[in-house]
Length: 218
Image (tube, rainbow, N blue to C red; front, side):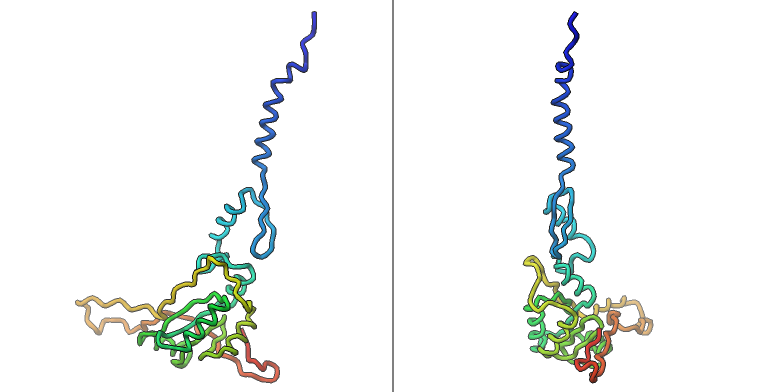
């Protein structure tokens, strides 16, 4: 009596094994991603999907909503730039344009109301505009050379590296308007607190000397 063929018994298994191997290969698909900082990472998702997910992480983007290059983001986190400006201030416009053309991510605070002016005086000891803060360093008044020097010292690039999708945050008032008290409340019962927003006072420029001719400190 002839014995059953082993080859015929294994034939139905071959297509199933091939399908399982193809499925395993698809599940193990790895995508190579080169980040803005040059770092190479690998993910199980296409590059576009991985990039979309990474932009939602803290520290990868600014208020502009677009991810910044790695080095620029590190500098902006360490030495954030804030511009204090006024609507009728020509020097403020010039300073703002310098920051925009250089590609500096910055926050702008406008000084218009009496509360804004009072808050500015508490912050800077005066009412001169514009005022630029770079980390803990404060510069009162506009000077192209001085602003450039301090931005260079902080490590900001000399030319713009902002992505094309970056949107500069809109300027906001230095202080928040105080809500009106209810009509039935006596005026004397109103708290005598300041209407200005609490802000940390930036450091004052150190004196220049032979060891530090530029007087730069962050």
